[in-house]
Image (tube, rainbow, N blue to C red; front, side, top):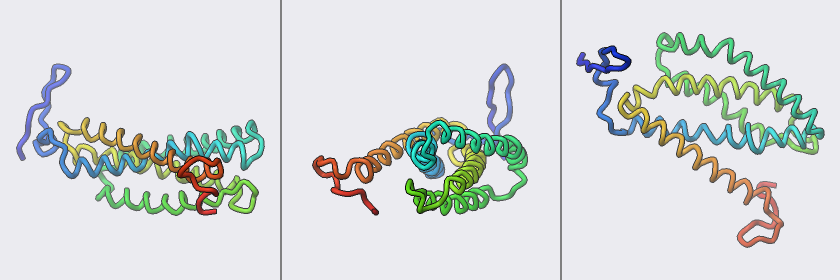
Length: 205
């Protein structure tokens, strides 16, 4: 196994040359960035700007009480993540193929994310309690995918190109989130406004 010397803080450490990489962002690094970029819009659209505020203000009906409910369930997920995620990170090298676990967590999240579509303001869809349970479970799995995916960065991009993969992922995530916000406004918020190229009624009912 060939190694290179990485120096820092006055110390030199041997590093596998394969992990160091050649400084170029290859297919592995791009793939890592694409997955990370595709994850970020969930945080921006669901957690921060659109869905959770909608649940708190519209589904609950009382913004103050809604914020209290959302905060309480966020605490539950935070406590569970605090108690379990460090153990996942510490044992990650013993889990075997990380992509398998990453795929499993992602597959579990997708139907739960899709089910949030039925969180209706008139109460005919899933209840506020169901929404809170779903978003709590999604939050836990989302953090697990973050731990697993971040552990793949050096293998995917190499140490010398890790910053490029991270930067590309951030740019992709913000770009996709901006496009998703624009589509949400065009498809659901602006219909009926009389603006050009805007539908007369919200899409999908």
